[in-house]
Image (cartoon, rainbow, N blue to C red; front, side):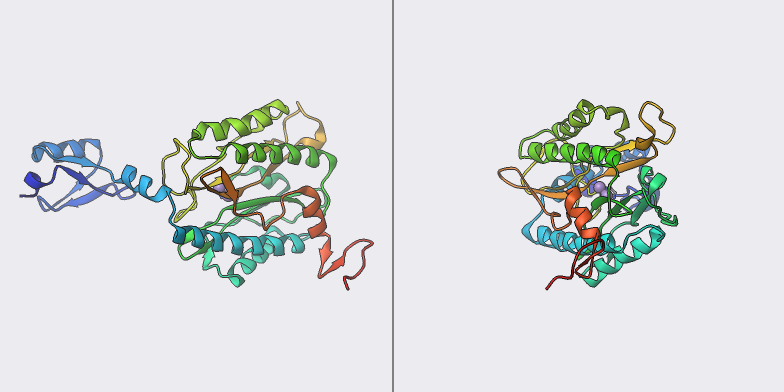
Length: 312
Ligand code: GLY
Ligand code: MN
Ligand code: MN
């Protein structure tokens, strides 16, 4: 009956790998051979994954979805701002994690959209570091890669800060390259651009500045219901919300650079909405310029930490 009317059957079992074949009332595995067998038993029927269709539907966000993502980003920003003020040598990564997550939830988040990555010193090199147990030291950088979830939608923002409140000259140099790479991607992110143009824009800056061998991951992914949301990564389209997250990671053992550059990484990640003209950065409430980060970190309750005076 169904086989006569239905030409294509979309079956979603990405994690499980098998479904109940309701046409024949038996469990079956949906690997390639299973699909073939199913098609053979029902002449004219094609069995496909709905992934491609769903990806296309989910990659363009409605106004309501953009509002939810913005709220998630705003809650994330509050968490990061609090964490920047709370970070200092001698504290533990989990104390910063607690500040970020407290700031998020206090500002409308249901919970973190993914395990918070709070990696200081050598842990800044671990892309999905989640232990958050290390005691932070003077001279460390701290990568905070975090995101709130609001109404089922995720944010995904990274800031790299100096634990002491002041970047070293080497950290400044690398940070400036990552920031420049991010600006290049912002400029390239517009409707009609190939996804590879985003990657190439970041790669060119980082390579031209001599850090190309320390580039370790893609520069963008879709953001939405999942932090790594589904969607094609072929052409950039208006209405997409994507991340822009270049990074440079220099291993401790790399002797091709001076000692001050070794054993830490820097990532800067922002979330952008692709508009008709280009892209709009949604996560600018958290400073990403080095001077602004240092000023924020060195202010405590309106009193500058060193040599400042109370605000009126
Ligand atoms: N937080 C994971 C990522 O940036 O992709
Ligand atoms: Mn992230
Ligand atoms: Mn990301």
